[in-house]
Image 1 (cartoon, rainbow, N blue to C red):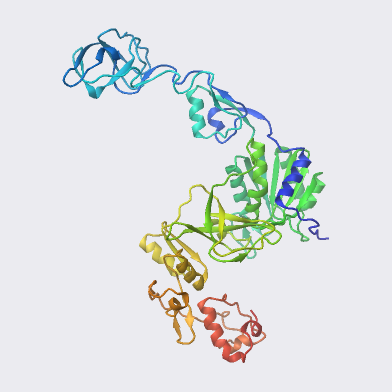
Image 2: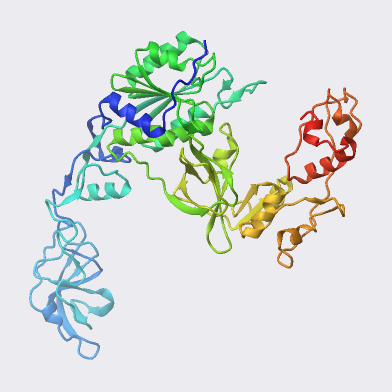
Length: 559
């Protein structure tokens, strides 16, 4: 019997249910690790400096350690002569003492000899044998990095809860700290499910797909600081699935599966979770993409059953899994993705009872502002993952996003690079050839929104170039009528591209003997049509219209 989604819960409700069932989500314990192994982990204790830094007075320049009183009034006209009595080298305690009228040669970083209170730079002296002529005065403390001036022994230098990056490691190393106490990262085991999946690198048979989820989810977890292991694709067997997940649960804090979470007859993850003794607390989210999601708890261990479509699984990682990982690591639950403001180029429905996360591509307008072009590719899209710069969120109570509405874009990466050249409009394979020949592939972006979408992007100032092929049925000419329609006369140039041949593709041998447009009206013929607004669709509708006698093409043909 198929399981139905009896009660969908919001993302916030799901997190609350999980926290209540666990009696609170908290860090998993403290471990002590060598300094280099602490990178990307979270400090579990305050760090106080065990020593001063620097631990001794040291020279900041190459020159001579002197007493500032001895060179007061020194100038090019009235230089002062001092006697050189020794040399201070890096890593050695100076043997010489600086007395009245004396100087000690010193290297950058070397310890200041006793008696000196400043260092005169090499550029302002002349040495002849043991005699040093000084041509400028120094102030007390000049060019000296004093002991404890950076950090004093006993200072709090890092607080518990600090994420350790290379910068924190620099501080710890400088203070001589070789081991630190950190919160133990959660151990996560990841499985993919689906009879249709094969690992990348294997031969792809008909009706099969390469596994995306296992690789992207494991990578995301490791980016989040978890210790994630991908265990491959689970076999389509209840017993094998249950055994593998049970073994993983013994060794992990969290087990994540992708796929097998919807309401179909073949989806059994919820049953495996239950039969392992875990309590299923969520089966279905008010999220789009990401509705088919299962969450179960056994003792203090969590099982996440994420959707099988890659985009759905990734979005639920950001909304549900990532906050749990953050808390377990000792951080705040909100995953602070970098954000930018942008405006939407057109109106489109969103939300409507579900929290909806929509991937977008960013382009820079002529005035320097950003526009966010939504990728309406569907939750099964792989291209949408690679093309998008980030996503926007529509809350459950939203009905639509309006044209030119300002939105917050959550960036997937802090290193956002906006392309210099934006080509927005009809999909054109030839553009990629041109960009490669011109060496512009790294500095350009191509967004396919159809010919009319390209004209709108030109008018908004988003596009530098728009591919277009819109037919004027009155003149049977392409594109030249559009500047007047769009109010862009004298503001755009139209360059002729290349000619193309438009036709009907049929099975090899043309088994249904399709000869012309009239055959498309036959009940035994199915056509895969182009979208409205495309030049090819305009031409096709125009050719069909005389044959339809007033009937709409959408009702007269199969397809």
